[in-house]
Image (cartoon, rainbow, N blue to C red; front, top):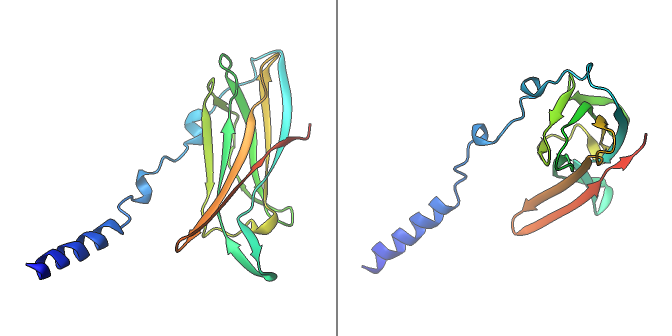
Length: 169
């Protein structure tokens, strides 16, 4: 009887360690479905924000790097107005454009949040990657907030920190 209980405990412990979530289950942003025509809109405020992202950080010395998952969070802080993003460009450490996420203006509904995830295995941005966001809002509307959360877990150790955007125009 003890052997059966022991085998069941071992079997359940292995089952509990499985990652049962497939990549297809995660929500992906369909930027084309969010396209908006902003040409007919008037009285708009234009802005540009810079957000630092760390897909890697140094560990112990400048010769050893630690990979991170980074999530850029794009937030409409208005309770009543839709805002529009014109650009979401991901740049690497040396300033090169790695990926342009938006081809046409896209909308964010009131209080809506969109996330862009840079996977831990994607180290193309390096230690000094960043996003540039161009956006427009109706006059007297609150500005969007762009934040990033970087995290990683190895074994029983975890690391996470955040950054916030800075308006540059």
